[in-house]
Length: 462
Image (tube, rainbow, N blue to C red; front, side):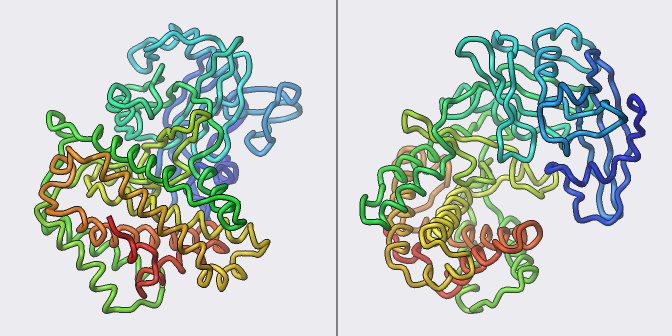
């Protein structure tokens, strides 16, 4: 029981939350695993959610509040009675202030707060849209601001926390951890990160450039894509540490290649797409060329929405949680650096399809025939992919062997990236069919382009 509510009665509320992976399960059970009342109406909880297929632990801080103090949408709250609610606590300043400003209240064996940089009290908070986990802008008096991020899924080894701690002293284009709330058994609950003043996410400058190019008012912004390639190279260089077993590259084996091939073949079967078997065999066969090269820790879910574009025209890389849907151990699997490039190329594909849809004022299905035939779209994509990859290899020029091994010549990278573009497109089909069926036409066409050699990548030179 929390206040007047039995956590076992919250199944429908859990399924309504963006962070819950049990939306499509007919029946789920919820069990309270851990509870701590820290005062100010805040209850820190760990809840086990189970279905017949799976189970997952979630960290959910709840705040007892009233309607007049309510600052976010009612669907994020649980109504206990007249003018009495339990709400997700991060969306209120009291969560940040009580835990991180009055941090001594939680310095104990079970749960503790670590402060790495002086931080100020919050005067107000503002939710940041677009994230599965709660991400909140903390606004202080004066010009100070931070980002509060809570991890709903409980992992003893929190991938993003580990990656940020590794990278923050190595590169300037990722967030730094200013403070953290950690449970000794359940791991990292919440982090406070530095705030970057951004114009947009990483996709908007590319979107605006494509629209301007279609209108005939601007050239293709290849320098923008090249800059992103250089940033990506810097990220991969920073993720290599031969003195740290977790971040030490390893030699790719036949078992690795077999695992990657089977992943693609399974997803083709699940996606129910028509394939040209000869070209499919050739694309998957490119994975054999990885034998003896290197695998490493990579971003794993690298796309334009995982970036910020700052007012100074720089890119900030976000979200190191790993690819959604993977089990905890899979989040730490080492893979070729080129997989991140394949994911970003798919992001260019996605963006260009939606940009043309908006430009023409047509829905996604009606956009399809225009997208296939539009030479400007094709040219834009090809130049962007080429500039991105050239920028990348420019950025790793003196570190190729540390990241790839003996790749022989850079031109091989074009054939080596193909399986990862296909793998990502297949993953996207499965994701869209599950969550946004109307969008599935976009990755389906992406698979078609690859398996019938109509994708712009086939005309790229490095």
